[in-house]
Image (cartoon, rainbow, N blue to C red):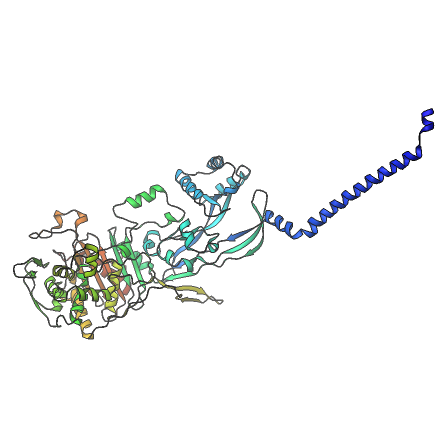
Length: 640
């Protein structure tokens, strides 16, 4: 009781009030700080944090453009894009790659070769957040199985894509080339931003040369994603610009007919329109299916192609080097006439051989007993070696090399064939650099009949035939006819694009007299239609006049006192059969070159193929429906 008397209730009340006020002020201050911080974050720093939030939720994705289509001259689709679904892996989202792949293998079949290719792509991935395909061309049931198991597959998604497809496969591969997965080296050569969403790039042929036109321009889209990185919706989109559609001068029907005519042999045929330079057919056999390379070829398939003795991957039309043999004799004749080396009436006596000096080495004619007295016309029609030995020796290498170069030998003169090679046009300088030896008169003798060091490609032979057909006027060999565009009213136009760093067109071949052209072409016509022409069987009953020249190129050397006997040689050592021609001779619509490896005689093997190719183009005849009568004129030596 005494204690209570001394208790000061008023003081306690004041103390409590002071403490309550202090607590209240503290709460007010804390609330003010929180409000201030909230204001700072929500108002002052709004733009910054809104952007950060947007980055976490919204992503900017590149959108690949649709690759342009490729048509033949008649509008037949040669290269298209087919929809395909692929299962892919995003490295940034995968926690356990091996475990994820094991789950995938439980859901869909995945081969070891597909896993090998995936592993290679995974290690060579080009940029962050780039998905890596595991398997292409999923079926609908496979897509469904993956979809219901997404919770077990972090970082795995099914993507829709357009995959390049070549409906005619092997028939056009050496002309079109193909596309394949873009690699790091290729990415360095293109504009990286424009290829941000592109997985494929032209690897060979037209697909490679016209990559800038076919590719298009990349687009972009803003997408909202969930915590797992899966797209929820598209917020904004800038559409990509599709690539240009290309129209080629190639005629698919002629291409397929030519392929059938080759009939499984190792051979090449190039046909050109002399008026435009457009390539009508470009065939190299054997070939391969380009679709194997689009999404990645298996090791087994690639090894089979690479190790084949028939070299299906090798483009014989553009890269095959062959002695042109007697196919160049018309050009040697023109050179001899125009250079003044011989007159148009020049004749030689052909005893069956030619010597540089009395008792010296004999350069044999294909005809053992010789042709007797030979003029220019007979020299071409009968492919008399001795006449050309004589004028080749008289001219010398400088003039021969100069004139042959004017017709496109020793250079790449085509517009859009990136695999084409210059081959070898010999000269004194070339031999000194390549062989460290001087040029000998005997070298000129050999060159005059297209042997020795001279090497040409089928494309170069067809190009020379085109210049001959045009009487010296150059038109550049090319596959592109133009870019195909469709107007608002549905009208289609085809226009040739402007190309940077285009190969220049060579100067026209001008001669001192037009009569030289007529005289040489008359000799080529007699090859096909003359009573003694080497290819008269191939020219028989043609509905038009053909100017042609046969050639048979030696593959292995023959001893001095021996004659060529195919029965004593393996098939791979048989002579190559060559032929070039154009028709109709007075108004050329087609120029053709044919090379059949180890085919024997040019007139018996190569000329009939060329005749049927010309029939198909000029007369619309399909030789598989109306085969030409097969008559063979036997050849026995190397130069015809």
